[in-house]
Amino acid sequence: MTLTRSEDGPDPSAGGLYERLTEFAGRSAATAGTGKDPVNLPMIRHWCEAMGDDHPAYRGPDAVAPPTMLQAWTMGGLSGHTDRSSAHEELFALLDGAGYTSVVATDCEQEYLRPLRPGDEISFDTVIESVSALKTTKLGSGHFVTTRTDVRAGGQLAGTHRFRILKYAPAARPRGPEPTPGTETEQPAGARAAGGRAAGGRAAGGRAAEQRAKARRPRPVVNRDNAGFWEGVAAHRLLVQRCGDCAALRFPWLPGCADCGSPEWDTVEASGAGTVYSYVVMHHPSFPAFDPPYAVALVELAEGVRMISNVVGVPYDKVRIGMPVRLEFLRVDEELELPVFRAGGED
Image (cartoon, rainbow, N blue to C red; front, top):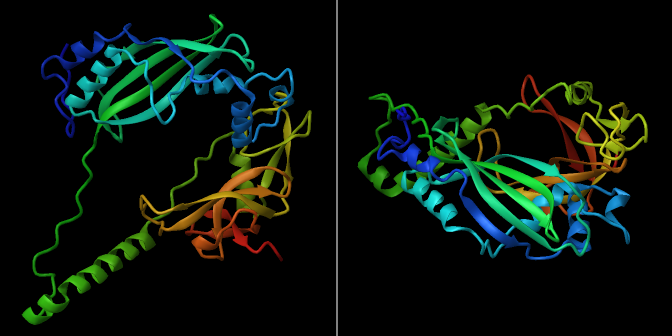
């Protein structure tokens, strides 16, 4: 098999790398692994609170775990995994050695065969299903690695979790334009010696600010499932979905109800009142059009749903949990307005 060398990445054909990678398909990545904790109500409660899921099936004496928690019971936590096989370590060492040192999770697939209940002891086996040929993405060139984990409760298969990552060599960043000869302003030697560093810092800061001013905010992804929300924003209305069967409100917009599964829905207009439920302060990385540090908040609306947005009208270090806020619409450029929340909450 002949592989084409990517422009910015290492040469994957050197030493028959891909052929060596394919030899790992079907090998075990973990055998007879055990969950660090049995299925338990506190973890279920924390998960549901984080996800905003208050379904009654996940509470009380007959509670079951949310199906999407399947992977949670097999994760290694901060102390890491202790049941990885040598094949898993060898595969990743081979990819690292070939220059594919970065990693990003791309997608997962889960199949649920039986509900997990508090007290269930979890065991699992993981196999390396496949390693792809070289793929080129915007992040860089690399190989997709797919693993499949069979999760058991009391020895009985409860579900399957298929996880896919990309091990890649980061693409080279484009260099900025070279300065045009003769455009730099000459300074007296004394001025360069005494103030060059400070002037350089001011110039660099000025250039960065100018770049942010010229950069446009990233465009939101608008599709058939959320187009109505953005139409509401354009009309200065914050629309929340309401299930046509059970009347449950939901945000962000989804094609079906998480409570009863109904695909029928209409909308209600939010009043605009809310409180800061949680928040983070972004310091790094610095993206064009953003000027860190700034606060990103999870706002709980008066209607009971939560949404993520910026808090304006107050310094980032003055944002607090429980702070009242009120909706307003911020025009960020000639094409885009975004819903944000102004601190204070009073009209």
